[in-house]
Amino acid sequence: MDKIFDLKKIIINTLDSNKAVDIISIDLENKSSMADYLIIASGTSSRHIQALSEIVLEKLKSNGVTNCKIEGNDSNDWKLIDGIDVIVHIFHPEKRKFYELEKMWSELIPKEKILI
Image (cartoon, rainbow, N blue to C red):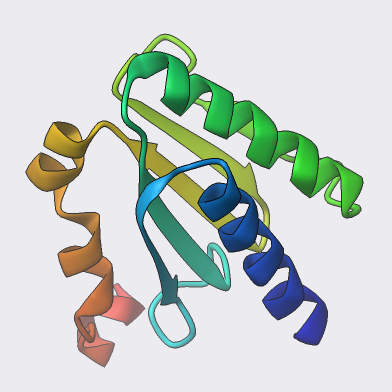
């Protein structure tokens, strides 16, 4: 788990040093088995969002995550970088506000819903 936690910190630092805005990390333990962490950030323009997604992808690969990929290549407002254990969403601020992923994933999910 320490390796995944370190990877999360590396990704957050990478986003921060490349001027991503409003970076948050959500621990998905006891919420989902799809990943250990969800990182959400905003970019300032479509070019910035694209650049951030490519930088994060390269950082994941350079840290040994070989099966990672970018989803949303056709979108100017949103990118998802699937880093297997760490998932990164990069949004245009308006789209981020619309989808409210922080609210959805930060709330505790009742066990009945997890089992379905």
